[in-house]
Image (cartoon, rainbow, N blue to C red; front, side, top):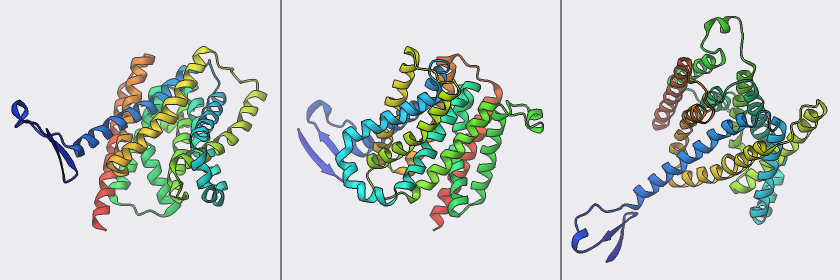
Length: 327
């Protein structure tokens, strides 16, 4: 048996009965591996909403958010302190900026999400999160004057209408009366905050991803602690019970740590543009998990909103790719 390398692929040539069989190509293996990693990444991220819903009444939102980011911060420091020390000069020059980003993208998003789940369904929260790529696009346009094409503008309108369909429960009369579910309104706050955070990441310093995430988690934890104190002062703190700790354990390990590693590995294999398309799986996983794990009802207006959001994102991405080819 001999092994030959050629054009980035490797082939095994085996004599006898295996001769003539299709050759295994390393490039294809890398693509399939990336697809699996991205499918698991979005599954774990979708599970965040399910865990947050299961934690309602078993751990208060601020307890969830504070323990989440403080735990991730400690884990990253323990395993990456040498890398963090090496990146410290670059971190120090943009420390305030990164701390604010961590507070916005991690704490504000998480707190709004976990409080939203007290008032709305996990299906609504998951489908609304599907609109995040368009809010990233809108924030980039507002903050950095990114160019906008016709397809991107139309795609944003499509997705935003889908978001409104969810927020109004599929009833036009509620839109006229501005009768919005409080939980869905909080989800709008969450995705707007995350959109601004993601767009603002383009100005981050050039440092290792573990150093970046550690610094963001420091900012998130610092922002969460006063909110936790405010929650306690109002007598609304719920100390986690067994179910609450189980939800926290899942949130820390899977959406916050493993999913992040998987996503970065996938980007290394197939690139950021192709990997970013898989974010569209998040509302699909979320709806599936909400129906199967929580027994929530998937209604017609959920399907309409989901189709409109995904169609809008696809149209905007098509316009972005076409614009990129023209340059």
